[in-house]
Image 1 (cartoon, helix red, strand yellow):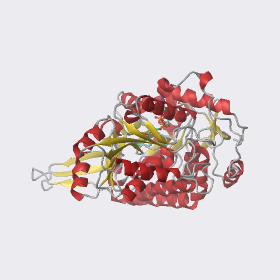
Image 2 (cartoon, rainbow, N blue to C red):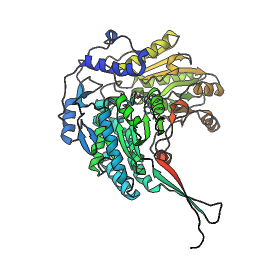
Image 3 (tube, rainbow, N blue to C red):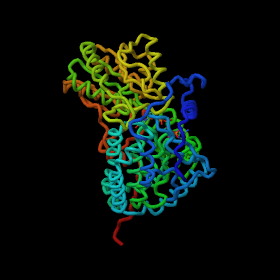
Image 4 (cartoon, protein in one colour):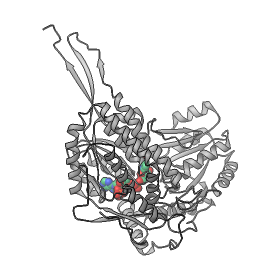
Length: 539
Ligand code: NAP
């Protein structure tokens, strides 16, 4: 399929963004005729996105078709969807818009490939995964450029995501060789009891747009290492990075059908994955609402399910914190990826004795953040993913200010226009405001005041989410007490960026099920089989 660089079409993009949001949370949307409040985009970007796309096209990494059974394929009805650069509104490429039929074929290919892939030795799988890792790292720059183009994050952050994302493939290559079973002491002398660990089967992996590479490798690495095969469904907003990673998997020699990619009509693809008895596992990263649907839909065929869902991370700053460390950590935990991560600090709880000092230091630091196109020099904050994301930030901020919160910095669309939003700090927030109860998913830091350690723990735990959390204190005793009391899967103490492939990532409560990364992440793709060898008497 030829890659087309369609002209800027802001209206199409606004409508598309809004129809996607309608599918998800219609209460956030104003009527269509009110959706063009963003200033028109006439800006010149710092680096010509088209020339980057052309370079990528020449490198063979700008793929626009789905991958089924080792073959690149258009959608069967020829439909395409456009992928946009959120920094400019320009269309980057038209990609195949697939649905149920293509997904069923991808499942059949994965099922076929499973027969042989699951029989390969751990050493063979490890070698191929290692090759894939090497290729991802060799193409780090192109992958990062693709990510900045379709997702908007600053290039430096995108390079960081390639390191992080490729790390899951490297870790899985190593861990493939360490999938041990057990021998259990038998209660009867003529028996021997064994535990075997075997791959779960075909895996459906559905991923979001905010980490276009890492959310895929975090699933596909361990799945392949364990002997499973996969059908990946990346977000329609960021399929290009996923397709480039799949191309590199082929180049690494991962056999046809072991990795398939379909994208387009999400509900149709999801339904096909759920309905198939051949798909034995669904692994999903995305919103809690869609995660619940997938969990319910998996019941019919009793699939194994892992869910990495939304968060509402508290970031607790105690009076005894080192203020420089607390500000640095909060900046990283809040504003990374323009605030669009599931572990982004969503509520900054500040003890009353340090509140004013911390607020001032945070505002001084945030004021210096450079906003712009992700390819621009020194840019640390890119655009939000789409118009719907900006509307959500505006709605939550408006609700907060109408209930007494005070904007201390920012608080509006950036003068760059389009989906750029000013890095914002808002004070006097309380737990009743929507901004404290829903993911902001934008560059807004809401400050809440608290009195005691017990108050902080109570406020922090007063949510259905339980993914990331952060604590800033100089007391070792307090850090242990609070870490143990927080109902969260991840706790960062005096640190704002804690994700790594070697540690388990996952949530408590409605933030999800299961863990990704580390040795614990492997278990999600394994079945445990108990074998009893009886009648051991001499023949
Ligand atoms: P989303 O709307 O739930 O989408 C996630 C994926 O699900 C996308 O590929 C989407 O496809 C697909 N999808 C949507 N409806 C579906 C359906 N009915 N059946 C099957 N698939 C369906 O979430 P998002 O807006 O992309 O991502 C943001 C959310 O992800 C936030 O809540 C964030 O906290 C969460 N997240 C969690 C983690 C974690 O590790 N816990 C990490 C990153 C993000 P399309 O995009 O093509 O519509």
